[in-house]
Length: 83
Image 1 (cartoon, rainbow, N blue to C red):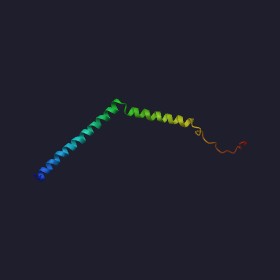
Image 2: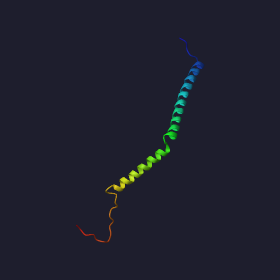
Image 3: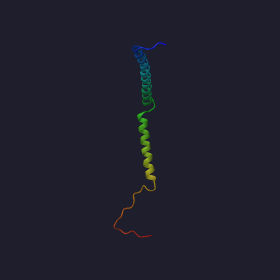
Image 4: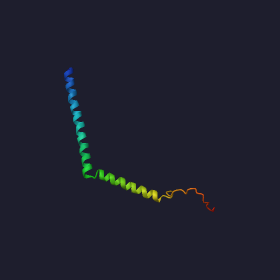
């Protein structure tokens, strides 16, 4: 059984570190390309803006049609007849 000396140990660690950094870099590149494809070909910002605007319009319609959307009557000096 041979023992590793210190320079061989560092050389082995350096090789493993290169592999790890290579994998991290490859994953970064895959994610970067995926973002570019999504923004370019799948609508990206315009699609998100359109979704946001449609949600805002739907919310306005929902609030307008809600039975409690009308403002509450304000107190005034004019007496109202009791029912």
